[in-house]
Length: 90
Length: 386
Image (cartoon, rainbow over all chains, first blue to last red; front, top):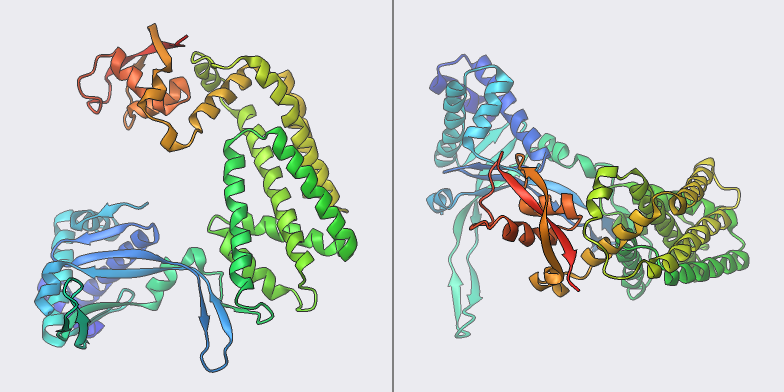
């Protein structure tokens, strides 16, 4: 299901026009992004947890050339499905 | 920051953002997540612009060993829900670290030297921490002057004074960044310096210079803190009297002043033709060290003692440490404000959060955690037990 299908289905379900649904999805995604930026954890029961994780810096080696790089630390978004959802797709 | 938000919190935020009613936004978010699950069931993949892709991936079967019996068994392949964040989300979340890029590590270092250098760099950090908490002592002053000597010697032999100045600025800049300066500092310098100049003496130069800068910063912060501390807090700190005699402190004070002088001297030495910033810094230090002994020095000493007490290693401090005091009647009344805890109140009145059990005892509270907003509690006057 791509973004377009997702929005049209969501519009039907919420009885909105696709344009409205699209705007709301964008706003919702913005809200979640802002929260994640603040290191917040988003718990959605029955769905899972959206959170950010810290990745430490590390040394990596290009196996072909043998060059070594220091990869800087970074923060990445991550999703942990709830156990209910996990079992569903297992 | 670091909060846990649930579904309804998210809905409330969306309602605010989109200007719709909370009920409507709750329905919308519920439909949103339900639809993701349904999409996964039907297609196995759901793509949402700006957020990312939810996808069901296969996990191949693999063999494993039962840790108890040592028997081999096979973990069967299964399906797993995975999430691939969109680039915009990744970039947004990674904003604090956006300025870093992978740096090639030079091969002139052997494998043995790399961990060495990082170890040395890491040693700097604990020193900084300790310095920031404790009063600078005579020993550190000695160590500093020694370090300064080493430093100048190295400089002369290497003949790279201008480079040293640059390095100081660089180190300062890197240290002021809030996030994990140590790990960044090493590679950055490596990448900027030409290979020929990287010698052992350079390494020591970095080390000594960074130590000096750290010490001077710690000293400035230390004196700045005491000068700007609200008078109220200082007064509050007085009732718990120091156990040791002030004479010891009086001896300590010149040493502190010495150490500051040594630090300023060292920084001025190290950065010949220093930047205006540096000069301002050292001026400030001198001014501060002039002010401190003349003004309110007694109060400052007492506070120093209390702080030393509270900076004992955690494992050494038990509740028995707090039995050094006797309750000598009531001192003040305190109205509990929102968000205040007993430890906070103890910190306000005594400058030491570990003294809260006295407040509990004095108020004969049955449950220490039973503190509510607007409650009035009395703060006992404490006297050291002879």
